[in-house]
Length: 100
Image (cartoon, rainbow, N blue to C red; front, side, top):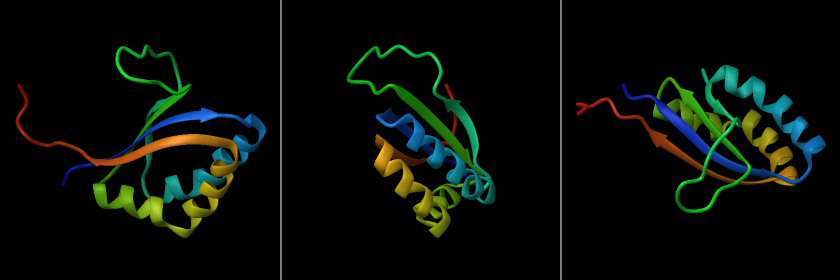
C-alpha cells in the first residue's frame, strides 16, 4: 500500500496564533500516524513562487492522509491555522513502482 503525503507551503502572518495550530494538530497527526519529513528549514525556490515555510508530512497510507484532514480533531486545529496563515496544501498518494 502506497503511503500518503501532505505537501504544504505556508506563509505565517500571526506567529502567536500559529502556535495554537501547532499545539492542536499534534493529537490528530499522532492518531493518524503522521511523520514530518520536512518542517520549515532552509530552501531555495528554483522555479515558480514560494512561501516562507514548506512542510511534507508522511502518513502510513493515502487513505490515512485524507482521513486525518477530514477528522473533527484536525478540522478544529485547521480553524487556528486559517486565522494565522495562508497555506497551499495538496494530499498525494506515494509511488511504489519501479525506479530508474
